[in-house]
Image 1 (cartoon, one colour):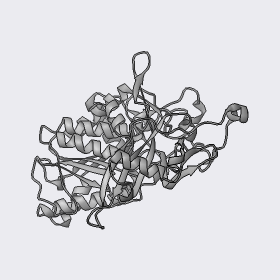
Image 2: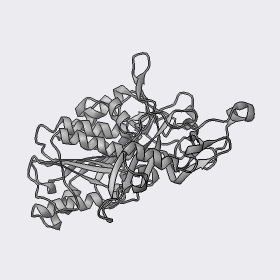
Image 3: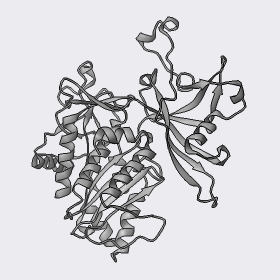
Image 4: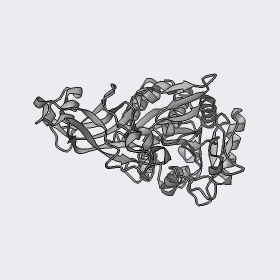
Length: 427
């Protein structure tokens, strides 16, 4: 599956994990339910695990024992958006109904205005076992909502910068309510109709807004990618493509692709990089294969992690926001990210390893540091390393407009990244 198709099939974290699982299944990976007994895995086995329907971990068992180290590519599948609140329908004067939303992550909110939006996520349905309700994925592909801007005639300062209220300004319009709909729960009826279930059987939901405009390429030579969720689904796609494209041969070291959730809100969830879930899975695999705790600790010490999360490309209109000597360019290759306050996991040793990988793959490599007066973001690498003290590097492809509803990346950079990941998995 190419990047454009992957982005269009993955409007939210739950759909992304479902898409990834389908690609893995087609490549011969089998699902292991972590609620059951961990099977003993042998050389060449290809398995994957999921947590909370929103994170996924794939492994291709290598020829060398795990205590000789594993090669991990880690990324995240969530992106800034708006979550639909419970009891979301708000009837307004004039017969309009809008949905009550809550900001998820650090979205660039002004980019969400005047765009065709829809709903995606998961819905929980009543089943026979109250402790194990049924999960249904929802992906409404047609334009359904829009957050209308206030006309400039009523806001003459709009082009001078406006402070937005998350509660007041960011509520999308769903429709015009007719008399026969007046007493109904409009949203629940909509969801029930899409899933072909009774509205009364819906217990709860995790639903989010997304932009229905498809991903595309643009530029004089179609050299750019324009899409929502490049951060971080482009890195997810690069890791996934590499893992499945190399699945036909048994690797030397065990290969792992770990896709976490909730990076945009701090990673401190059971499905986030701050959870010990991945460590527990590795330990259970070692135990199932007859190894004791010592081997598991050795495996961690001998492993290497590539934490793949997009970097800030140099913006030609805002040179003053960037470090004067170290600012990556679109099309210049993957970016190693440094931060003196340890917002990234990179140190000189990890950077040297990734630089060497890029050299061997014939791929250019760039560096990023923040302008010292401009605070940057963080990522999952340092958080994961705090629970699994593995050597590694924080890197990503350069993009513009990070956390906008549509971000801009480079086609060439994506190709470079896949080549670098392929070389890493080969070692």
